Length: 145
Image (cartoon, rainbow, N blue to C red):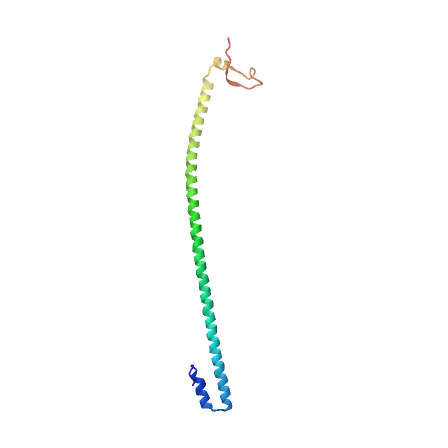
């Protein structure tokens, strides 16, 4: 049997020595060689496509890594801003609570003052009939003689 290297063509040609079978063997060898060459070219193109695809994937990995770093930096900045805002909100909530307590205390004091004032003291202030159309004018004492 003929070897797979280029020697099969030579061996076959020597053995058949000019007959019609010589052309058939030669044609078969030529087809075989063309197919081998075609397969080599196809394999080379396949390796080139694979190499190009691998290079594209590496570029994508690089781009995604860069984008990921940018996103992580944005997340860090946003998280810091959130934590700062949350701390400020805590302080403001505490201040609001304190101010509400002070307001309630002042309201309680006012109610106590109103409840404990004597009728004489109440008479020292203008009432609705004495002050423009049914409005109480507090802090405007009117001394009656």
